[in-house]
Length: 274
Length: 265
Image (cartoon, each protein chain N blue to C red):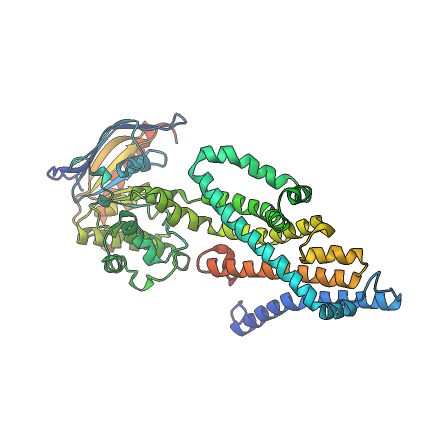
């Protein structure tokens, strides 16, 4: 008999492992929701203090028209901010990579923009920019730095021998960038995108909250603030749930994209079959 | 008993290094007064301990590094700029992991803007190194030896006159290395290229070369020239022959003497 498990047995174990990865978190969620419902029921907590899970879902159903409109507003802002952050971050990183002078001149300001808390910048932006633009600007500011930092790192971590090979065949700057540096940076760019996706949602939410009651916008964060003022706690929870779901969907979408792009060649996307 | 064969009739050199010196920014003198004439059609090996500047010499021939002193002279008048003349095989396979084997082999043609009969040339290049069925594979799907074959196919796809190889098989296991040695010799004989090969292995250098330059370390200089007169084709029988062993002893003695001459390793 060989020491290795038979193929059937190994496949079975893999399947079990995969099931566990899905079922365990779902089980935890079920337990938490159950405990939540029990606490609300046993102590007869009124919904304006803490609504039970059922009440939250009912509110989501009854307020769906309102909430879905808000969801679309927040999602559109997030995606626009993300797209601009991606384009801006990659473009700036490429510019830095091509010119030391530009990098030295601008990089400190990119860092300053990143380390200054967005919550503090948002009210200022709201003074000078129309509200939708200010919200978009916030989403962009928080999301672009991880793309910039990761892409900069990726562009400069090219294999030296490959760089020599390109030099040997007299590759132009453009060819080096397009055929060597950008593909080599791709895993880094995708990593930056994963971070930026979540951050652009945060940026949008922060700006909507900062705009608060003065805002004419109607994103999910605005709904949360507004419901808070009205003590409509179930709707607050429903909006929060949608925000959280939006964040999860964004994360998984970007993970899937990363997997699809890298699966043929990068270590990070390989199946652990050994 | 064998005696060193007389040097073959001096055909005009393809490329020559004349009194080349290379001092790096940190003050290390890699090469000093290094003279080398590469003759058309020969299989020339630079043999020396690590750090003797043999890779630096190869990089200078390739134009990847500029000599601090001395000159590189090409027979056809400064053709160093004509990148088509040179194929380079690095110590590692140095393939683009994001591209298929075919795309990797196509790269030199792309960069040089060579014409559209590319796919035929790529097919032929892969065929030559025994990778015909692997055009669409990604590098990570290949073994170490196959990656190196792909790397050789890429170096040959522009049909260069001069093939430069920098310890290409150093990281491979012995069985794979022997097979690639044999296949490389067949390729060399079939294509009539000039090869400059760098290694620190006495056994590899004797098996492959028509001429060996033994180098001293720090600074790198030519210590001794050995013309290996054993006829080609050489096969596994040659590898176990008394003649091969005698050549290896001679090269090994020369290497030991060269290292004694240089700074302690």
